[in-house]
Length: 96
Figure 1 (cartoon, helix red, strand yellow):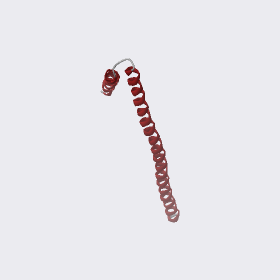
Figure 2 (cartoon, helix red, strand yellow):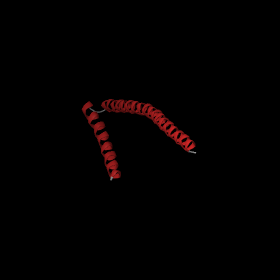
Figure 3 (cartoon, rainbow, N blue to C red):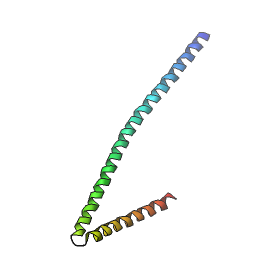
């Protein structure tokens, strides 16, 4: 009877060790997938910001055809600043 209890305890210890190893492997795989997704999201965000910058630059150039270049840049910069202020105020209001 004692031998059976020792055998069962040994098997339980081995099962726990295997479960811990499996959990570590699962966590490592999930972290690897998360890192790959984060890299793609960051790359997409950077490219999106660059695209937005070029769109704003083209708006300045288009307005510069009818206004002085400094006025075109000031107008586009002002509109972008107003949009940014609205977004920041809305986000800060929802943060609270």
